[in-house]
Image (cartoon, rainbow, N blue to C red; front, side, top):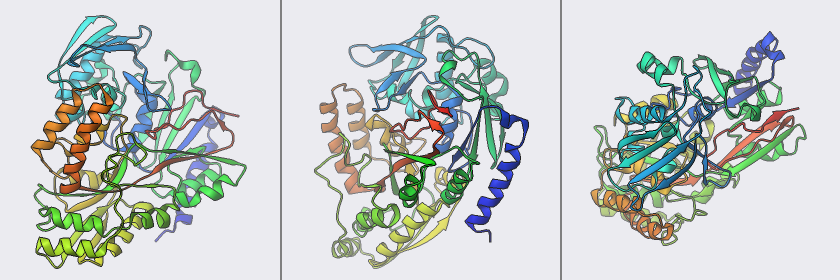
Length: 504
């Protein structure tokens, strides 16, 4: 078996050979990601690491700023009608796709309809409120909704709002991911699976002067030790998800800098409730899931695995969030109460298989959870599973539980509806509560945050009872880079943005 050191040396040799090539004479930024993206099509991508690449490859209708507020991108301004059933976008007039075709109102209409209608689209549930799109003129689009949905604008700050060339979309169809033609500051060169993704600067980008590098090279390295060793050896310039245990040592080294930001999302154990392989006890009995949650010492998880760098949690939002419901604080571990729940459920023991991604951090989290819940008779078997394989299995409902995170969105609805509303594409739990769906629809119609928060409190009450997801913690996105990299900023969605970033 290869050790992390051996893996790092192999990776370094491969990267070193590349560094000696003529391309290395250009301005190149080498970026280490935790995984290799699943697809490079905004409509079908489902991996967090894919968002890092797509951020530079495919422009969005809107984006977010460092405070998590919606910011202009392809749309320079927008307005809602009085009842939040129509959103009008005003587009910039100087943007083009990588194939030279214009980004106009027709292109926006094409992309939104593609996201809604393509059979393999994962964006449907995010923008399902759209009923039609009207092209008002070349730079004006009105999006009509079947029901009020204020979160739609936030959805357009992620992959649902990324635009591809309609010409390329029609020509390539389902093969678009193999040769994507988008609209961002960088254009596609190649994707060698499990090795590298190469992008080169798009000189005709409307804001090209804000991007300094001629070439970006993304490499998936699941082991954070390997990523850090390659950063230290100079084979990487920037890496995402530095392990919390490496923060202090990396910060102490003047050759590197560390930049953390509290994330918008969560990590938790999702139970298959309505899928074909749902566990008859844990999946079908909320009391067993409540016992599971009560048996976990979330503070211990934070200290042991993350050296206190994470935030403990029990809701779709971190405790620091405006949307967090203080009526349901993070529970302390209570073994006796957990055993009582098991007894009330009528079970003495439960055997539960949990799929866990192969990275060391999540494996360690689940090993600690395994030991904790084992004390109340829940016998967890951990099945390490490559992330993309795990997601595919989960979509089919062929699992009992898994430990996966959600990277989070700026609108609270998007931390709940895509994963837990009835029939949503990302609803791994195959959970359905029609009363909760009605509340979520009511909240989507409101513009006033305080009024929305009251409704989300009712939603949280339901989730605390049903627990289709046992929320565990909210991690920080921790970036590390060599000290030559200047101007990098961390955003709360954890996505790498390279506007204004330089290397001395």
